[in-house]
Length: 187
Image 1 (tube, helix red, strand yellow):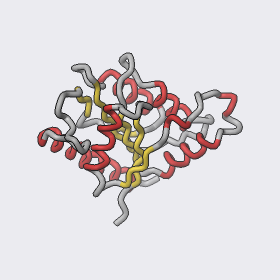
Image 2 (tube, helix red, strand yellow):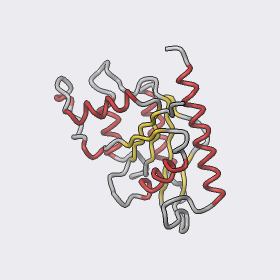
Image 3 (cartoon, rainbow, N blue to C red):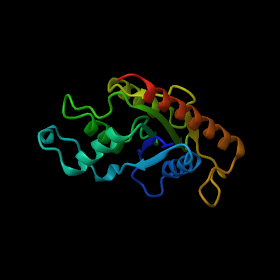
Image 4 (cartoon, rainbow, N blue to C red):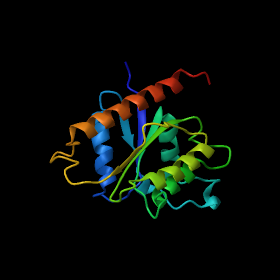
């Protein structure tokens, strides 16, 4: 049986991002369920409507990757209580030009890790509003708005705490069912 192809988007461009570490840990936990393909947000130019008539090659490749995906997993930090600019830029590009929304009808899930007590809840709320407008069907529960703490990851980058690992595995199980539900839905 073919595993669903999941576009994995990390909202931070930092190589040392704790959200990149979380994305990697989630990809490891979900490797038996999904075929993860990470999108490179750093390759996208800043959105400019003037380019809508002749999309840059990096944008075309990104849009094609979203369209080919069975679902989208976004793992993102929170910047100033909102969505990081690199992630918002990618969302804007894949929704353009008008009438060519690559996000339309995609099932998605959101996860995030932050140093503050609220985790990434404020950014995730903004992200849910944006994605809803683009006809993306975001998994409502469980919400993965985690606060970073010492010992969350082990030396190999996996989730060290058994309860957290179990929670994240449950999240991926729900996401798998969410993706399957949309795969079976009539067009």
